[in-house]
Length: 249
Image 1 (cartoon, rainbow, N blue to C red):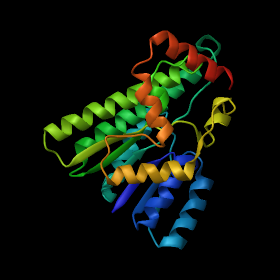
Image 2: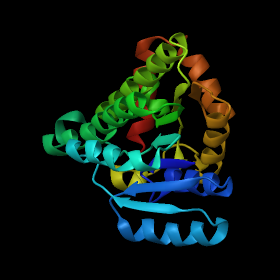
Image 3: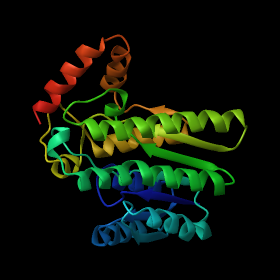
Image 4: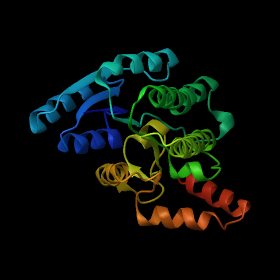
């Protein structure tokens, strides 16, 4: 059985790859940085004897997403993890449009395309899309990123319900982590404002939720508690709190 993991060269994606390999799942690893993928291939093949296919792909290009799906059909992956994505911290006005559109293509279009195509081609299996706690609230100074993750969250939750109502053996699950120690901050141009969990711990919770078919996976008690209280806070309080947290970055 194969699992496809995008954004597998570092962070949560890399740790999920390690955990699935430990379960003797063969892997298709996708990212732009081929050197890191090749190193992970050697590591996992040597440690667990799994077959690892490396595919260096820029998922911000929509045609590449379609091509990736087509190339993966021969492996018939039963698990798809749409993890690739990045953020940009700062005011909406100060960011260049090209960078925003690249983020939208990676965080939204790529996830949409791969989810759509695998839902249509899978006989059975699981798709786990990586959103964020930021997807639960409008987030000043992280406005576009939070909006992309809200899209991922709502899309996956609705599709999963549709598939269950249709009694199809496919699940679309959504991982919504809070702060995690990954390369996100370096790419986003920010430093950590809140205590975060390790990528390893987040991946363990993600894989456990994947195998338990959790529609929405919230890593850590504090994140579950935060989501609960967000339902009762007035919008003004949510905005001011989110702004203060992002300002620290």
